[in-house]
Image (cartoon, rainbow, N blue to C red; front, side, top):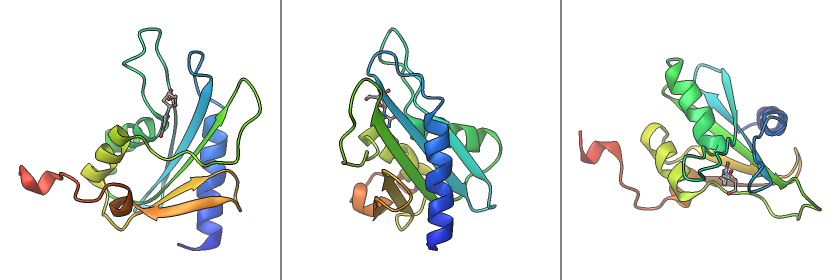
Length: 140
Ligand code: THU
C-alpha cells in the first residue's frame, strides 16, 4: 500500500475516533475501511450501559459499508487511545470478533494498519491476525 494512501486512511480513522461513544471503558477507537471502489467508510466504538451490545469501531465501519452496498475491501486502519489519562505508545489491534467479521468480507492478504499516527503504525495482513480462520467458503 502506498504511503500516501495509508496516511489518508490513518487520518480518517483519527477523525472518526473523535466521535467515539465510550463513557464506560473510556477507550476511544476509530476505524477507516477502504472499499475497493475507493470509498472510505469510517466508524467509532459505540458503547451501551448494558455493556455487551457495544459495537467496536471496526464493525461499525464494516456494517456501514456493507449496508451501503460495498462488500470488497482493500485495507483498514485502526486507532485507539484512552480518554481519561495519558495514552501509551502501543497500537490497538482489532478484537477477535472484529477479526472474524473482517474475515467474512476481506482477503487474507488485506493490510490491517494499527496506528498511533500517520508515521507510527504496525501493519499486518488479516491472515496474520486470524490464521486458519473459519471462513464463509466452509458453509456456502
Ligand atoms: N474496541 C474497539 O472499538 N475496537 C477494538 O479493536 C478493540 C476494542 C472498543 C470496544 C470498547 O468500546 C472499548 O474499545 C474497550 O474495549
